[in-house]
Figure 1 (tube, rainbow, N blue to C red):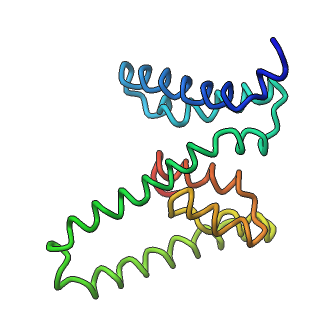
Figure 2: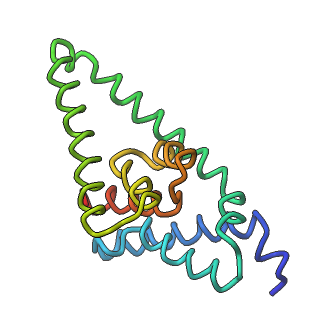
Length: 164
């Protein structure tokens, strides 16, 4: 197959969406957590990229539109939270305290555990934002010198399998 085609934005975007659609159909049919469509797409795209010799930076640039859509989904979650505003009135302090405590416990626990296993600063920086959305985690990790690919995988795994 033509190398230019395999490195094109259209091919990489189509492969990603196509693999996700295939994974969704398979998951709906079998309902096995390890066959989650995002996990299948993730693993399959690693294979496709390695097979085609496409670097991750090239892939990331090609599927930037999906990253943009992911950012929009964060806004959609914010809107759903806004719709619950009436239910949250009068409970601001408990909500803020619980959110702050959960954030601090989540960050410190993963950093301390990784540190106990001898992880370096770059790995610790990459693991710290495990409990937020991918766009926010990547935006935080990138300027701090973390590994954005590792952060994306960790956030993804937490989202699918629960807390790590």
